[in-house]
Amino acid sequence: MITPNSSCEAGLRLPAGTIELLSKFAQLGLARGFDPLQAQAKERSHRAFDNARRIYKRGPAGVWPTGSSNILKLSSLREIKKNIENKFIVADQKFYKLWSKKIGLAEQRVFLVDARESKKSFEVAAEIAQAAADSTEWVALGGGLTCDLAAFAASLLQVNISFVPTTFLAAVDACVGGKTGVNLLGIKNIAGSFYPADQVHIFPKLFETLSDYDYFNGATEGLKLLLLQREHDEASRFWACCLARRTSNETVVSLAKNKARFIQTDTHDQAKRSLLNFGHTLGHLIETTSIRKNQPEPIGHGASVLFGMYLELKFLGRPTNFLEAFLKDRIKADTRFAGDLERVKKMPETFLSLGPLINDKKNKNQKIGFSATQENPECFIHYFEKETVTSFIQSSWKTELESLTCKN
Ligand SMILES: NC(=O)c1ccc[n+]([C@@H]2O[C@H](COP(=O)([O-])OP(=O)(O)OC[C@H]3O[C@@H](n4cnc5c(N)ncnc54)[C@H](O)[C@@H]3O)[C@@H](O)[C@H]2O)c1
Ligand SMILES: [Zn+2]
Picture 1: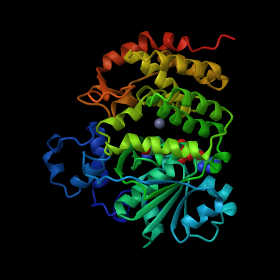
Picture 2: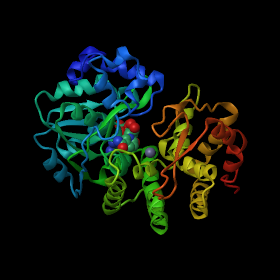
Picture 3: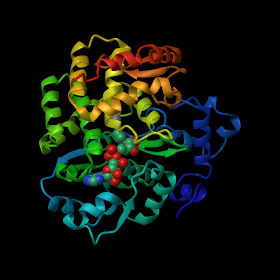
Picture 4: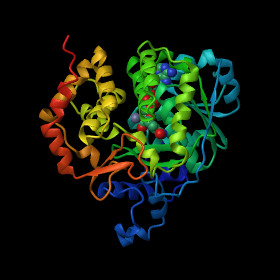
């Protein structure tokens, strides 16, 4: 096992001291692409400084080349095998156990990833790099965690990588758009890069073995894409199929391409791409708060974003009556969200600190960023003082959620 920091850094071809500097940047709460003058002179003269700044919150605008992935629909397990043969495979461990025999992976060189956020780390990225030896053709076979992690290592080593997403969320979200990342000091994706996979091979049959929890995380991201594009009828049909866990190959590929269109003109997340964070400012707050000690199961990313979208519409007070009614009906109609709703309602009473929002990459000048809920070239992110957000949480959070309670 590789231990921090120096052997990790060597394995990932980073100068010694890079990880320590990243930790400092995070502790100082620096913004993405921060002005180098904000750091101390002694840190700026450090050999690792430029590298750390390049990957801290995925670096300043324009440090990574632009590009996009080729999104392809597969129609059989045999096609998966054909596309990954003779490549170095980084696979989700759970997926591998369930599917490797069916796909016929047994004889290939594989690095297995235990898909837990604590493993989305520099250490495991360095282990992947070590296991790959001199292979320059990689494939990640897994959910968003495996793909983010493997692609981060691939970006530092400058090798080719392609993806076979095995979760719904990876197919419609994580595998599209080139964002890679690892966690550090418990902060999600605090280091990363923009490194689109060469190809993304989509085959939704692989989602059959997902838990409901993981399935709905992906379904919500798909719904969000359709809502942002004002595809309201399509959104209703899509959600009905998701409830029955029947999403076609064509639908998933089309959602992935939908996401790709958001990114085309804004690869490095400076403008239109920000819209994809709709529901995620308050969604992340809910998700992170639910992961506290002594809490029951965490509230899934999907459910958190669903509540987050509704609350953000209320908070922003934008003219989006249809969206609001749409989300309200969907949440009220489905008993699977009822338990989570009760927990979310009580969060301000028990514990809801803005802490998790402070490092959000959308923030600027100490203000908290919320994605716009519709396309408006003049404003993709709205900024608010912390006090304004706190006041909404204290005075309106619970009452706004009350209207989502199913009375029957
Ligand atoms: N790069 C991006 O743009 C982007 C976007 C969204 C999320 N993400 C990242 O993606 C990660 C979440 O991705 P995820 O939801 O795919 O979760 P995940 O990769 O953690 O997988 C979820 C669970 O499903 C299991 N699993 C994977 N495939 C399976 C299958 N076919 N059958 C049964 N079990 C299977 C995994 O072992 C894991 O337990 C987070 O780390 C997040 O930061 C990245
Ligand atoms: Zn999301």
